[in-house]
Length: 78
Image 1 (cartoon, rainbow, N blue to C red):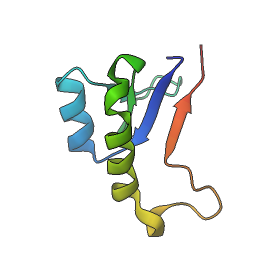
Image 2 (cartoon, rainbow, N blue to C red):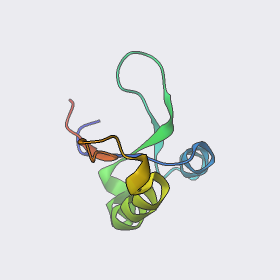
Image 3 (tube, rainbow, N blue to C red):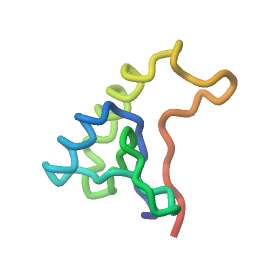
């Protein structure tokens, strides 16, 4: 998982990216997949910028938790 970009996107889009082999549903480690979060590995790094913009559009400023601003997270776990 190290080096993957984790993004919040609509559930259907996460499924689409997973089916296309671009990413996979994010598993934060407690055995339960996050339906609206996708992990995109470095091999798909050329798509990261577009996916970040897509995530920003999905989350939008009114949907971000106050003070966190986090809806795109690089995953540094090993």
